[in-house]
Image (cartoon, rainbow, N blue to C red):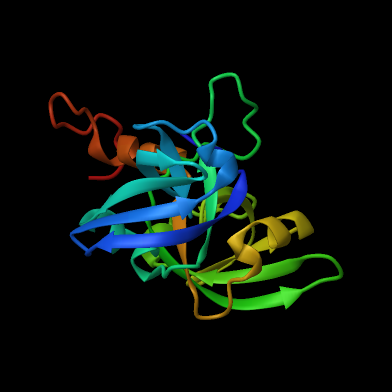
Length: 209
């Protein structure tokens, strides 16, 4: 589990394999310093398992499902990526509960600068927007953000100077894809209200299917 508080900007230094069986090597001195085989690190919001560590770099395997549901397939060597280690039980939950299970890809529509911040509008699939609420939480490229606006086919987030400077969101331009993970609580609530009693197959809530 993660909190959506990016620890550092890493750099993709190697790509091996193909869309069915890929392997990425990322330079990230801070997150690599205590990484071990089997550790979880979120790369642009995607939870990946460390398979090797070499100095300030770590390597992860990526399967087709991950490539199909995220922007990782479009990364090229030298690209910056947001990095976050899995949260410890004793850590502060600075953002919100983020699983690192990307639900889909959104597209940056526009950026509107303020005096010290920017409002970024992101188009998202209707299947994901149903879980998005104004003033609710959403993870964009692994960054925990508060939804500041919501409309037909889009939502907006307001980025403070720290987010603009220390994450990839400061670099994303209109047309760029971003990984989206909606609030898992909303998905579980919907499932409980629509599937009924999982042991009998009967709907006991009086709502939904």
